Length: 302
Image (cartoon, rainbow, N blue to C red; front, side, top):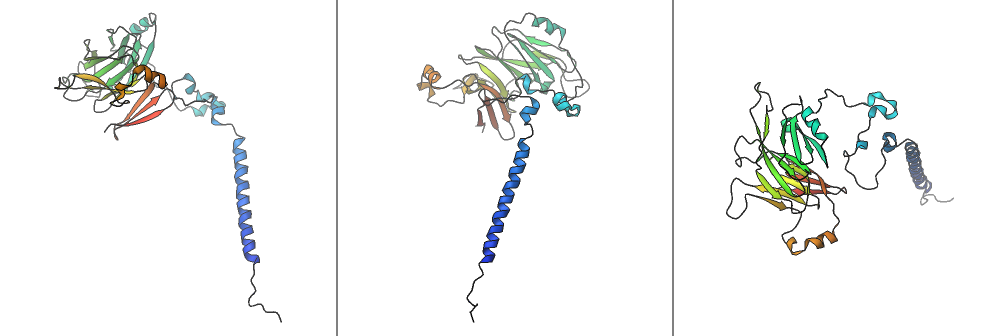
């Protein structure tokens, strides 16, 4: 009679491993089926009609970035924005468009409820709620490249200077004082009549580097993005110090020994990548820059 005490049943482990393999194959087939079905549907770029870019881009700068959602797939319910009011440009500003020669820029200062428009070397600021209260400055000799509004540091200027208006051209950086006649009589937020002080507070040379963007922090620091790809800052103080100027321009993208390398050598070794956008996270004291080629840099403001 044969003994069965030392016999081993090897069929069960084999069956278990085979079942596990079958489960994995079934799961893989299921994933392949869903991936294939997903690929048969049109992509987001195909639905919106936006052509894919070969290099990193900054969205929001081209008209193609703002599609008419109501025209997509014939779904009128896709509309997410609604026009509440339209305010035309003031007639006195429209007259100057006929004399435009070189450049035109436009933006919004929501903190003071104003719109700004730069035509060549002139800048106009007015209230966007009702299209009135137009202030302008025409004391520049070159075309305006970038514009920024700054809440100044406390204790540096007189109390009636509420903001600083930074205007940059290809040759100089001009900082103007912004004042208001009085607050609104009804006690609501905002100001009544705006005034641009005709005499500049600061004037600095660009040293051949146009500033493509201007951004300030909540503490009154002024940063600018250069066409050379460097981050600059305008440092200013209440009065002339013992060892420093009243106002100066600082390059935060170069080292203290960069003056040893000739500028023409830097231009030959490095491709120009202008900074087109600056954003500040005031809660964490972090500054972000975006270059024309899509490079993002992060700076710790301390």
